[in-house]
Structure formats: structure tokens, C-alpha cells
Image (cartoon, rainbow, N blue to C red; front, side):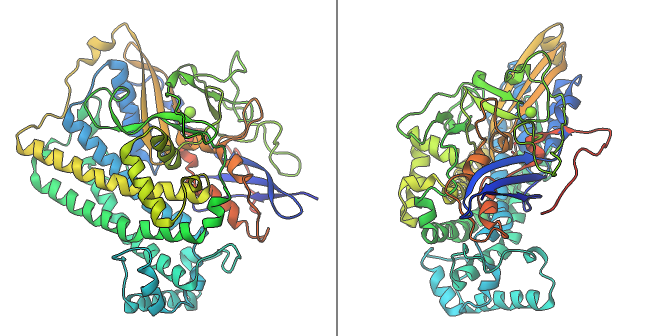
Length: 569
Ligand code: NFE
Ligand code: MG
């Protein structure tokens, strides 16, 4: 007898996500469906606008990776106009994007994902002396290293629990068998969870130094950046570096050790490919290291495609091979049923609802997310894709960090193909980015000291656009993965605008051939629930992608109609 399990809403994510799985008699997941139950509308709003304004509006696609849409949009317009920003603008953009990585990844691991691994209640049973010793197994210089500190954290926790006001720790699946940390390990991770609430503030402040504010930075414009005064003032670079070093310290002494600990404790899951998913990975590439246009520059993250977990081969990335399919999505294309390239993309809603039992109509349309396809392959994007494609491309920097982390956890490369690997990849790239950012801030400070305050490439918009049709794309690696914006500009006004977003790639439903999206595929990868009333293993794997559904859908119902009803199972 198989049974259908509905998890709706999935919490500790951005937006509204529903997962339906089919369990066999042993509670093993044998089928899975991912559905966005929310609808938004930014692509449509952008039509008819001056293309120089797109970035400011496009960043409203999301409240989390706001900046990623902002600069990706600006890159698309720069591509269409044929302009390239100068060195200082490149460095500032890399620094702002880097601070988004640090902030997003730390907040994700601790505040959105950790409770899938860490049993807070068990931490109350820990021996603080043993915890202080245990922390030394994962770091030479642990963030917390004295029994007194661990005891104080335990006291804080006790007060929480005794007051009955559990706040963020309420309603979890404490005691579930798939929690594997010892009480001491749980106490270590809980301590870092609380500390990360403070640490994430430093990373948000970093973005605001050159971005003006956080979220929604505002200093990037078509052609460059506007924060000349901040580049000129050496105190700004000093403050940035101070916050960067503090953040990096937290990453090295808390985040990375916690990942090594998880890698060791959850070794079997990693080796058995639990949550592995599609095995196909796509990276657009990002963080330009020279001043060529973004699609030609040498990049920190190598672009490319790896298929079937085959690390011996990297297929070169070509944006013309991206399409979006709507066979199982609540949209309808005019005049065609075929997947469309984003330059020709359409966003026409066609909501067909749930079945008579309130379940997804899995053989028909069942999500507000489209299904992106690369060269007729379904792919996963994100930190794991970046580490895999980088590794397979022979990217020395990426190889070095991946090898160091795997060695510390005592795991082979193969272990990356799992939920544990996906979560570890995010930590590994956070470590790498925090090191590279030191180089970038030093370069920016040195340029400024030499009197190079060049921040903008001059252009004449009217001259460039009058009477012309121009097309451009911006390709980025947002924290959650490959992000592309495509714009068509006619006579200076936006004629069409399409965004294909990381969570669209990962959370999309089946495609026209019935092939699963990345979440769906990862859920049917060797996952068995230890208690079907507590879908902890489902949350752990879905969270390992760091879902953002606002991003994935980015279409808005301006009339405020009810578009879906929620059933909380
Ligand atoms: Ni809304 Fe985003 C990132 C983008 S997501 S968070 O990272 O682009 O899919
Ligand atoms: Mg789109």
C-alpha cells in the first residue's frame, strides 16, 4: 500500500512551497511533486519601461537575494547597450555580491536548515566540559572553547524551554531517530545558531557600505556604480575589511567545523547518495576577475554543465540552449506548446486548481513555477553545481577548497552527490568567497589610494537606443544558483523581459517528457522517513537547496484575487 503525504507549507524557506510525496509500505519516498502555490508578476510590470530602471524594479522579485536580480538586470541592459563597467565598479559589485553570499549562506545554514540536523532539546542533556573538548575535534580554534561558555548557553536554552515560549524552536521534531548528533554536538551547533544571529548582522552591514543599504542595495547603475564617495574614503574600506575578517573568522571557526562534524556524523547518508537528485549540474559562471564584459571575462566560478555525475567531462555553457516549459505549470503559451527561449518567453497565467481531494493534479498542471530545461536536460543549479562544475573544469581554487573540506570530513569526492554534499558545498564556497573578498577589498583600496576613482562608463542612452531593437542578457551566480535575465529593448523601452531564476531551475515541476525537476528527483533518491508523521528527512533535503519561491515565480496578481487555498497537513 502506498500513501500520499502532503507537506504544505514547507516552513523555514522564502515563499510558499508545497511538497507531495508517495511513500511505500516501508515509508520510503517513491514519488515526489514540488509545487509553488504562490503567484507574482514582475516580468510583466517591466514591459514599456526605460531599460535603465529595470534593475530597481527587478530587485523586487525577491526580498532575500534582491541584489542578485538588481545587478543581473543591469548586466542584461549593459549587454544590450554594449557597455562595460570599469575596474572599480567590477570590484564593488563583486564585494556587494560576496557579502550577499556570506549573509545568505550563514543565515540559511543556521536559521533555516540547522534544525533539520540539530536536536536542540538534546543539547540540554550535554555535558559542557565534554562539549568544549568535542569542539576541538573540528577546529583548532573553536568559536566557543570553554565549558563556562557552553554552560551559559545551556542555561539560556533551559530558560527558553521552561518558559514554554520556544519561539523559533517550537513545533520541531525533537527526538526523531534521524537526528544523529550527540547531546554535546547538538550543544555546539546550537551555540553557533545563536551566535549566527549576531554574525549575520556584520555581513548585512558589509553590503550596505558600498551598496547604500541592505536589503535592496542601490548604488549600482547601468555603466558602473555610484558610491564614489565611499571608494574615496579609506575609512569605508577599513570598516568593510574589519567586518569581513570578523565574518570570515565565524565561517572558519563555526560554520566550517559544523559542516565537518555533520559530514562525519552523517557519513552513511552521504556515501549512500541520500538526496542526490538529478546528477546534472549547470553553472553560468560569475564574479569577473578581469574587465571584459561579464559573458567573456575570466570568472571565479567556472561556467559549464556536468551530466550524470561524470566529472571527466564539462560541456561548455551556451545560454541559447536554455528554454522554459509550462506543460505542468499554471501558464499557457500562445501559438505553441514547445519550451521557449527566454528572449521569446511568455508569462500568461492559466490556473487549473487542485483535484477533488485537494491534492495536486500531478498529471496535469500543478505549480506556478515553470520548468527550465538546458539542451533538453533537467539540471540542478546552486553551490553544489558550482563546486562540481568547478572541480570537473580543473578550477584550481575550487579544487583546493573542496579537497581541504573533504579531507577534514574524511569523505571521498563521491560524497558530494547527496543532501549532505549539497549543504557542505554551500559552506565550502562561503569559505572560498570570504578569502577572495580580502583580495578584492585590498585592490579597491589600493586603486583609490592611487587616485583611480573611475566608477562609470559614459554612454548616451538615446543615441544607443533610438530607432533600434537591442537584446541583452545578464548571467550571474546568485547564492542559490544560476540566474539569468533577458531583455529586449525597442526604441529605448522594454519590449520583453524574462528572468530564469535558481529556484525555478531547482523547484520546477515535471517537464513535457515527464522528467522530474531537481527537488523532485532528490526526494526519490534513497530517502526513507523514520516517522511518517514527522517528515524531517523531506525538509532536510528540500532545505538543502535553500528554496526561494518568490524568486522562482516572480509574477504578481495585481488584482489581489485569491489564487490558491492552503491546506496544512
Ligand atoms: Ni529569492 Fe534568489 C537567490 C535569485 S533564488 S533568493 O539566490 O536569483 O532562486
Ligand atoms: Mg521567469
